[in-house]
Length: 296
Image (cartoon, rainbow, N blue to C red; front, side):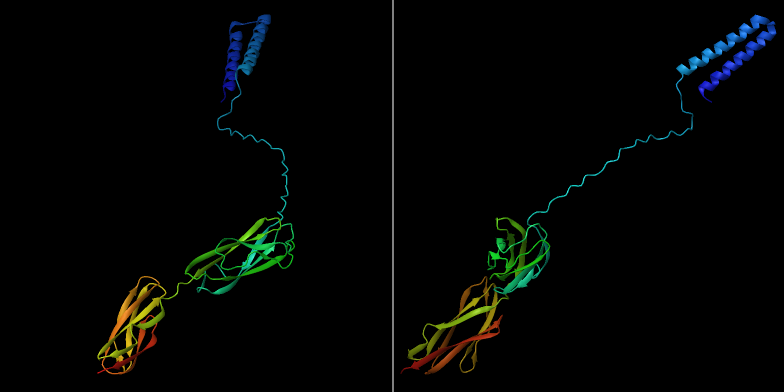
């Protein structure tokens, strides 16, 4: 029950008591009427004062509604961004990134792209190398036909894999007549390391012709060249069917080392010697021809 309701009930109770008092003391005529008017006036006064002094309150349990503020309609402003003069969209390419080649291999890289700018690519536009490994590619390379906006350009460049193993990247761009560079693209390849191999053997001797009292000894050398680090196993082969046991020699890099054979002979005659590279080549080198003339 609210405070205001309580006050009203209290006033009604007071009026009821006053009327009862009128009856008890036999109020008559004007006195009775005056008392009634006074009670009404007091009641109105209290009610008016209650209205001014008591602020409205929210009854217990009454749900307070949220306040909703309406926002004015906002119309978005659309701004058209102009296309650049020179712009390209990549479509596809040949020679995927990381393709492996042997040293010195020739290959052709092709790119396909669409003109998505506002300007036509005339034959004054060209492909230019800008960074990395050029790999023998021709730069600049002018377009052979015009490419209007929306049309597709296919351009290619002939390249050669570098001689040494490793990863190589070359960056290329299109260049406008005013010098603007745009739309970069690249070549990424891997040059395979060659398998370890003996790439050359030279046989030599201090003397290939000896004349004198026998026996005489021929000192023979084989100069072995490799393409990198590794171990070479070999054995000598001599005329007449003679073999010398297998030996090995280590190489720390691509280099040339020599191995020696001392071959004593006691009879006049012509001889030859060869060297067989067992690992890694399985290859025979030679012969080196020798002559011995024994004197008394």
